[in-house]
Image (tube, rainbow, N blue to C red; front, side, top):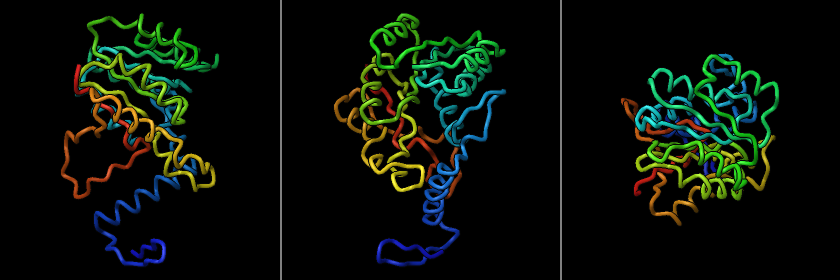
Length: 245
């Protein structure tokens, strides 16, 4: 495999961890531009997630065993159904979905789904203090909470969401700032130049620097017999774990 890096051209063995890392990065970028993640459903609802990210968040949820998952960004509802299905299998837990606009067709499909009893919907801007207060009122003080931020992925919006929802996260659990790959998509056809700095990763890093009670760390592998440590993901530097009460 020939790699061109600026003026440097070098050969990398194709069947090597370095080649896998390079190919994975390119695959993720091209796949995002081709809307690869728009081709999947979960129990009948479009989910718009990279399957690898679904498996990783499943590992985190199974390890933490939260009583509540709060997700900002509902879209078609596939992620809410996914988390609810995990809770159904685990025999515990429920999901709160927050979105500035829940379209009638999507609301109807979510509320008519066989897992709807495990899902509550809150319509309104995720950083609106009234919406945050409403979510707070739906969580019992003793419940273990995990938060997933999947609405507007700009740095400022994610930063505001982190400040608003991090207090809900219980020790040992996570707040997850998804889709930080935007920082690597500034030069693809559907990307924007400003995404190089205006992305969720920058917000997560800044939040971790200000909040020592949270550590920016990847979800550890529950099982790992791989040769490469590369994680193929749309969510780089996403997982902020609460390490202190």
